[in-house]
Image 1 (tube, rainbow over the protein chains, first blue to last red):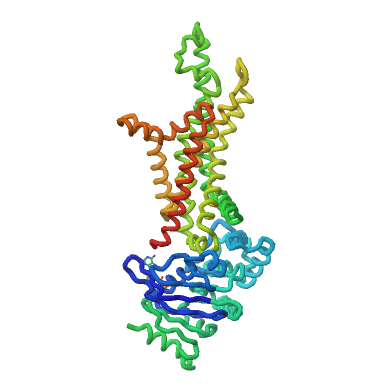
Image 2 (image 1 turned 180 degrees about the horizontal axis):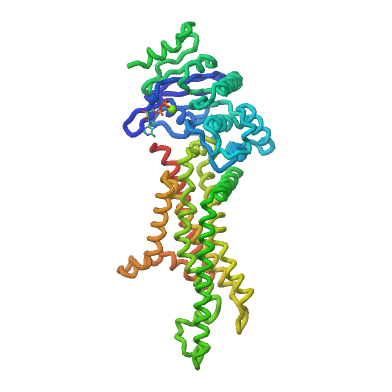
Length: 236
Length: 270
Ligand SMILES: Nc1ncnc2c1ncn2[C@@H]1O[C@H](COP(=O)(O)OP(=O)(O)OP(=O)(O)O)[C@@H](O)[C@H]1O
Ligand SMILES: [Mg+2]
């Protein structure tokens, strides 16, 4: 689903990611881990076609992100670090607008909105302005927006950030249920979440991939395996 | 096509649900009413003076004969004042177009959904056009009022052809200002900066003719050609002229293109 080859991004002279190579298969749920400033958000911004890399290649579903951006973007749902909301629109109005941007067929818009709203638990908020929502609800609307149109690939930058424990679990269950049909790449700082739902883990440190393995082989089956490995790989 | 339309609709909704557009709209209506009343009062005074003098219009210098009728004496003058007012108003309407997307981080949404940048630019511009037409377009009520309550000794109260040409010139100037403002808005995150720079650019354009008079040929002719009042003068006099349409049409197209370039380029220079 994702093929990345020697992907590099420099912000002026600061190297954010340095020659990344990895592939992600269809239907996988991948945890994208790394300390603050490691380059997770940068990688995601490139994979969603928001910004071009300094060098290297990225493909989504076989489409090069910078040669056939429209085809690639049709297949991606993206939750950026900050949920991209228009405070003056209602949740329903906002989701409808995103459907139009994504080209969801007119006849399906209503049922799509209902589907993602149920999935993310925002049905009761549909007629409120997005500008007055609490942080957790904003985050949920951001996730709902990414799911519109059921794109085969979801790229979620810290999806559980700001959610309460119950909602956190619901969102994780939701993501887990997408596995198999959808490919999901999510970044997070909470290792327990990764352990609960991801079968594959990518760890990035100072712009370089330091682990690209299945959960089982990384932890070696131990309960604290993931924490130990994360700390060992991202020390110095 | 559908996305362009959706973006346009969203722009209109955003404008109308934020107090900003209403403030601008109210201020514009208020100021233009003041100008209108002011013009009417001086028109009346002038006519009273002329009627009191023994020879009537024969004594009046030719340059003031525009005050003989309501069309030239009031409406065309109103359009001229509105051109200046537009200069102040348009930056406040255009400043949020892209700057706000950056601030809200919604630019990331626009750029990662399967929408072509050109659709974003067109959709936004059409929305902005709708708003500027509503804001400065309300002034059409003034000639309508005149035609209902005014009177003339010869022929129609108003010469509608001239009125509408001037109105067209005003809208054209508004549309041009919005295109420039949109481009400037696409380069900054700050709405304040966007408004100020747009205003400065439009003001400089307005002052071009003054600068031109102090210059030698061929610069004088070039600046005169580029100055917008030169371009609009024939329309304001009621002469149908395609030159200004082509001129402002090209300026609008140029700035739409620049906006397109600018949003593409920014992704590269992050
Ligand atoms: N717009 C930018 N301009 C300059 N440098 C940037 C910019 N965005 C990110 N960086 C730098 O690139 C590096 C990677 O940042 P990135 O946001 O990808 O990290 P991250 O892994 O998402 O971190 P976090 O866990 O804190 O979200 C950091 O050193 C950051 O300072
Ligand atoms: Mg990040």
